[in-house]
Image: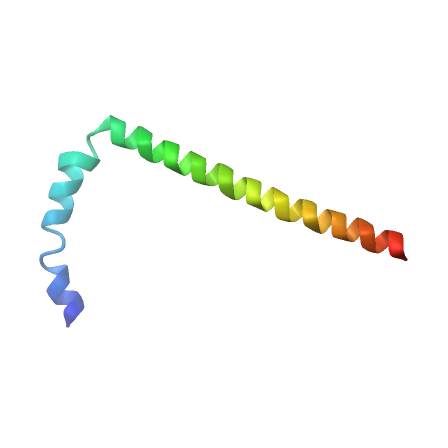
Length: 65
């Protein structure tokens, strides 16, 4: 019931807001792209750090044998 209640007014402001400021402003798109690029770089760096730790652990384990 609450989904239909909030769904009714939801689509009204959604498209108006999207077409008014968010969708047509190129600066906003470039800022969003920059944020996504930065977040992806941080996640890639964290992933590479974990993979380096795994690799060094495997090498250490092989040397102990």
